[in-house]
Image (cartoon, rainbow, N blue to C red):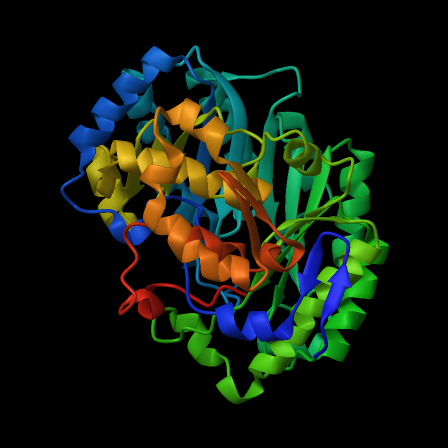
Length: 465
């Protein structure tokens, strides 16, 4: 592959090869491997109480772990079933968990963001979806002006003709459609057959219903993908015209995720082809008018994600890039992770254990952590770099009451190599990521990570790109 210069990114194959090592995605800092089981439900309860002093708005996340069919690439926490009746006990416990939260939280705080993830949230019956939103509205201050970001993940294969109308009616204004690839051979290999007209029809209907932002998820690195086949998928996706695109890297970890054992490793694209697919994807989407937000996200210039980045308001959390940095994130359901003030708290992965704990009137927290002052400073630095590709050390120092050059002396010394390789410009306390560095931003952020153990990093994380 030759070097590619294209607007706000540059593909330099030598640098990609040198820096494409394993590393965190930084949806949090510290990252999930640092969570520990000394942080339990009592600590989470206190975090909720303490958060009321800030009066910050809320972000609510609900994990719906049910799927009618298992996609072989999936690494999510899910339950395969076709019986929506199996959801009833789980939904009852979600409502009980909301009651637990409401005991300790000032529920007059406005909910500026709400998200249902999965699994497949639209696996729920229409009445179940109505009930969950109705019960949420009883306990929390949901906005009724349609100005919040209320989003849901949708599998177009698992919706009825009136599902989108129902979702709009109960308050959702953003949707994310799973697609992954449009090539029939790839779809069959991952057990997700989904013709173009199914996805396109759902997007057209969502636009007609007034949904504000429509996202499509793609995955590169799946079996039978080639640069040529994925380029063809990309042309069709551009014709479908979503507002946002997420293009995720498939990490083949069959020892961790049982469904992936159904994928033949010999059918996966080579590392070189995988990188070629990514290079072509970024180039083509930017050519088509999308803004390369960073890592795996793209948005049209008029989308709120691109506007937030331009205005310096972009943030990153467990759902990826977001426009709501000011919110405390309350996450409910199995395996979900809350971010409340200076704490993280993760729920039990196992559905039975989760329901047993909630049924006993206590949170299902199994691990988490309270961040130190150093953690908070490093989290802020990493968030600024990964969202905005720059860091004004002088301004940052005033914000955090530190001497930037002294505090990060070790890190600034290590970053000299990134500077020498053309990934970063450093002038005084000003750090500016170059177009070549944008692709490798995780490598730059890793320098600020105080927890990385180079010996075990490859076991905990996938490659940067």
